[in-house]
Image 1 (spheres, rainbow, N blue to C red):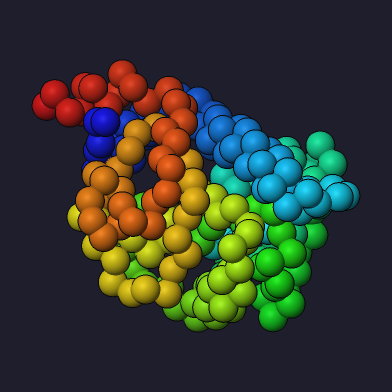
Image 2 (cartoon, rainbow, N blue to C red):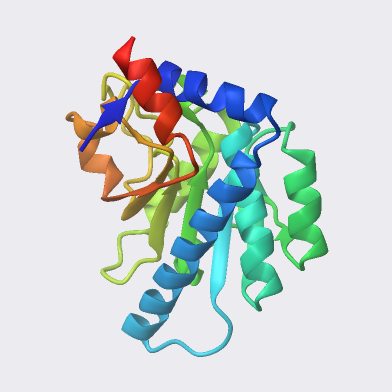
Amino acid sequence: MKAYTAAQVRAAEQPLLDAGVPLMERAAAALADEIRERARESRDARDAAGEPRVLLVVGSGNNGGDALFAGATVASQGFLVDIVRTSERIHAAGLAAALDSGARVIDAQSVEASSYDVIVDAILGTGASGSALRGTAREVVGRMLSQLDEPQHPVIVACDLPSGIHPDTGEVPDTCLVRADVTVTFGAAKTGMLCEPASDYVGRLVVADIGLGGELERIAAV
């Protein structure tokens, strides 16, 4: 599998963003597809009734926006979507879309991780360069980790990469992070995802094609 550094991926994205290509919408659509599939599998495994339940744990960056727009999509399709904010800042348009579609924001203290079919980790993106979780994000993840020791726990889907791993080196500076069952990464695999110890937290890697191929090939050839 070809992999690229976070800087290479950002460089590939920039001319497309400048041209108005809707990269976030493409990423959100791919993430929504994965959420739907994993929720269905989770409910079948647990023989659960009622509407699928999804928890979005979102930070301030664009991967939080990806998750919020994906949440808007599945909420409009009848999923029950809760949002936990780990930062005062949040992607405003993504939040508005999610709320308009029926999602709700809940307090971090009220999270009961085991009650969901899918939990989406969208706290930190590639720009965080493997920073350890702090503040509310650390509190929420610590709470979830204490609740996810049951054999049939929710499916954990990481948005772009598991929060807390270094996208280039694969370093994991702190073990307070959620081990993903599936990581939906956008445009290309990041080099760190294929390196230990980060690879142990990625789970099944899904590379969503959002149209970066030509730019990535050009950049890699330089």
